[in-house]
Amino acid sequence: MFNIERWQEIFETISKNKLRTFLTSLSVAAGIFILVILLGFSSGIENGVRTQFEGDATNRIQVSTRTTTKGFNGLNPGRKLQMTNSDYETLNVKYEDQIEYKTSLYNTWGGEINYKEKQGSYRIEGAFPDQQFIENATLTQGRFLSQSDVDESRKVAVLGYQMKEDLFPNTDPIGEIILVNNNINFTVVGVYTDPGGSREESRLFIPMTTAQKVFNAGENINRIAYTVKMSDNFDAAVALSAAMRQSIDQDLRTKFSVAPDDRIAVRVNDTLEEAKKIYSLIDTIRMVFWFIGIGTIIAGIVGVGNIMLIVVKERTKEIGIRKALGALPSEIIWMILQESIFITALSGLIGLFAGVGLLQLIAPYAETDFINNPTVDFTTSITTVIILIVAGTLAGFIPARRAANIKPIEALRDE
Image (cartoon, rainbow, N blue to C red; front, side):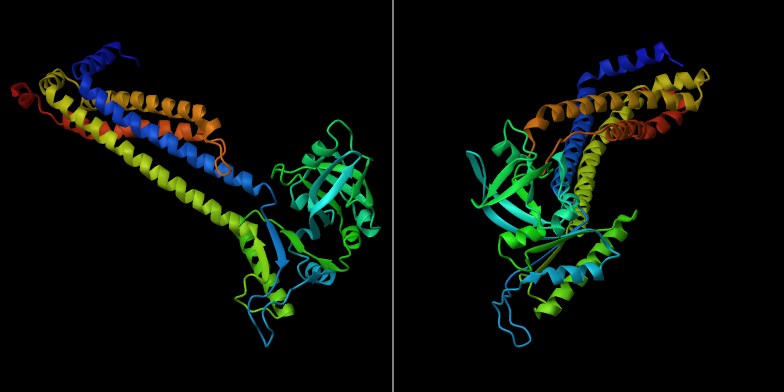
């Protein structure tokens, strides 16, 4: 029940100790303010990292080979390792049950692309249809590569959105003919966007078999990319992906006779395991931020507790009179707790609103590759409010107990 007299007493007590109450409230507000800012930036870091991973599928395994840097089994270093279609097919059969999407890749950098009077230099990649899902590419026009395109080595191409803007700024590119490397015509069948941005959208995808013929690659491939089948249990998916990565690595080292510690010659990257490491690091950062913020709040709580002890001391005679007139210990305790919770909650909410407001102001200017939208969500705000209520209760509990234990006779003798 709302008791106006009780609130008048609270404001009267605060007015008698303006400076002391202000300084203590400031420490609580600062603690909440710091906590909100830290949690906002930890959220921004998490959003930024997730955005970076969105560039490709998170559950991706990428395989590539280079030149050996160490001798092994009587073979000299400096051997160039070249994967072929047969390596891709062998791995597909062996890991069929674990593979979700798959593609081999053959790419060339700096390919010349012409459309009428416009031209540009772009990366050209031969791929299979699954590349759309491995790259998280979204079609904005037309279609992606099909299995028929690969089987028949068709001269069709899918443009990145940046390429479309460069070469077809005011024209629908679907069905148009582009000239690749000044001598081969390709028909545009689709346009895609990529969460990785303009760099990823400056690529031209063509069927893998077509790329091998156009660039005289024979059976050679540059890379292999897979996504592993995900399960509901993230740790189980990470373990499956890691086991597959290690097994593929060993398969290729055995085939090419590569030293176990030659990390340059054979590279098998597992983005799912890397994602787990990054997310674990983010969780650690968030815990550290919570620790710092809570520590700052505790300092404010101690200050509020000290104020309430002083208040109880100053009002000892009043409390004794209340008890002599029949006030219950629970009423005395609630009287002290109400004042403590009010001071803590009010100053804490000021700190909360100040922190959220500052984050809203600086968020557009704090954006980097690894910080994105540093804000505090609704759940975190509610959690902070709960912390304020608990903090106010804790700050007033000891003084309230002391007040409840005051004996009326001794209180009336107090000077």
